Length: 218
Image (cartoon, rainbow, N blue to C red; front, side, top):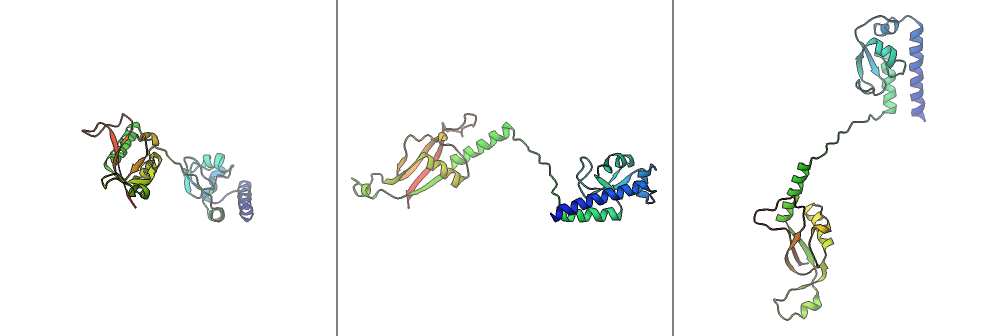
């Protein structure tokens, strides 16, 4: 409420000063333009952002006619003299308007995207995903020999692999990118085939992309 009242008071003060200035002869050289006297450029203080001119509070130089016919009637700017400058400073100190900044969005080209996909694919190819699981104690005790695989208490699903790729490698993939007909059910090392876009060239000597996974005990 206090801020709105001060803003309205500031605008009313500007209107009153400009009205009084137009009713009498102005003696300050910066205000002669309002009386039709020709000066090359006039220094003014912007009260708000004006395109191709400046932001609120900035001091700029404009043609006298532009100030007289456009900026002053709309209270977009005031002459650069102390009584106006003080009023503008106080108004901006209390209101502190936030200027909108232009944000330029640079779209990535298809070539850049392809390079990023290829880089991510090579990281997946060279990395090794490590997961920890508890063994299935009942089946562990009933193994016929020590060479038999140790089954997991809870198998590793495709969705878990996708989540671990995101967590460990910071790469986002979809379940459709992995070819895993059945969950990983035993400890060991695996090469899980990956289905990636054909536009991504395979490494030399490779016939398909693979994800190296190691499942070990906790």
